[in-house]
Length: 445
Image (cartoon, rainbow, N blue to C red; front, side, top):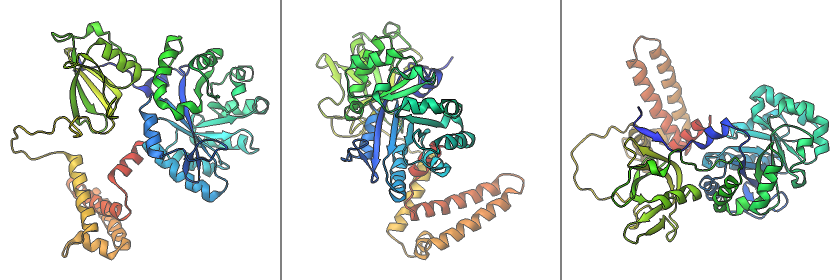
């Protein structure tokens, strides 16, 4: 029997299980390497990183991105921003715009996108979809549709090579079922929650829905999802797998909640929930507690802005403690400290064995030698002699690793790998590439 019981299904796993579940999608636009407001409105739309992180924390399921570049130079500029977006985003990103050949498809997918959105109005799209499906898989190909007539003429080929349709004309919502039985997402005008529910009920093949309101006010998405769920519409929403009555509460009818940063597992704080706080947390996606001193509900961050957004909730083996993994905005502690646990009471001497920490420490030591050269330092010598010297060392160590690995046992390979890793980190510092940059790149593959 496992020590921990999962209380929520992971969002991505649920999405894969049932395509009829409806996605709430934000649509963003790139022009001159920055976010802008729309297809024809090039007004800047705010910080790229802050915008994408707000989407991560609001219950949004997917991002559609359109590159509005006019030429190759601007297209390359937008690709740089696209790659940053996929690094920040915890959501699937599907990107289209200025895709004219197989190399453009490759660039978009290699930038970290889940799908490429081809333009149904371009003459070469049918051939491009066929080659893209062959090279990268049908599931990586989507198609934007402005006209049902245009799609109808190409539907036989498109249904063979395309896995998803993105409808850009709101008037086509609910009518595409007369043209195809493929799942499709639709961009609509800003409307009420009731209207959105009506559109989603109209055609079971509607896979997702997007409007500019989601981008402008992502914090309103949890409320929308709650409403859609009440209307019987399949939606990816925080849903507990256990009833409150199954939890073992303390004498005050509360359950303690240990709160961790979901990225590095740092323990941030301890708080308590009653049933109302628990249900409010599920409804809004923001951690809500019960204040024992004030005897009232307490939405973490409501006054400070330091909200905690739920990533997962877990229950321990005795069902008497909840572990919450959250995206913490700002500080968790009212003192301004990141964590409430910052006061040391006692500590025994020990040798840290944090391997990732050792890697980071080595990287920082190398970086320090780059910023503050030290006489007699070999690392400083490498930086002083420039990138050609560093690259020659990497080539030499790679060769020595190959030779060592031909011998039995692992010791020689282990030693040479450590050398190669050191020189690789020297190159990383020289090229201003962080460890996080490399890990993010690996996670996208």
